[in-house]
Image (cartoon, rainbow, N blue to C red):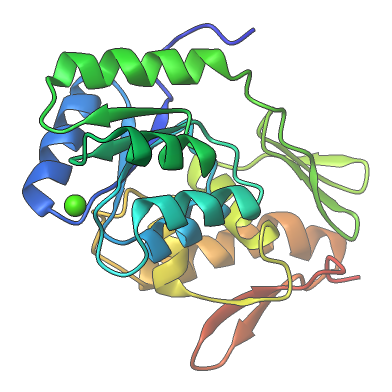
Length: 234
Ligand code: CA
């Protein structure tokens, strides 16, 4: 049973109007939550695949794919974070469509922030978060729930940012990830000061998960970024 605790709650806001996104984001941050913002549905699908959000606030009217399609793609991609849809369209048909595509609740714009917060709490409580399964790459294992990492039988101690970056890699084994992608998933997306910080963290990670074990798991992809070998560097 998950006890409601705003601290450590991570919420993804999907809203293309910067003013509205900022308003909601600031309100949630004042409640102690960590907030990421996606301006399009496509971006939201990518972000939600790489990080575990405790809930997602999803506007229906978006450029590109709309909120309904975004929700459909999230669920099709096995993202089960509770979704609260924001709609300016107060028609029964839209509500039904929203819930049919996998949203947990909806809120009609304009709304009071207190109501958004109450609905967000309700949808987050309703769904027992599934324990995410342990991620594996060869004998490198990462447990997102307990936030622990092992190489073989040896537990490896990582800082929270090192952990976040390794988790991002382990959700996309074999894929070349850009520094920008890694920054976006390990920091609030507002963190603009970019890419060479990733080089620093990759060096630290190699010192912890690779070098002591004679492995080379995180490969440099020239001109692109980095890639985690699916076999764990064996
Ligand atoms: Ca919008």
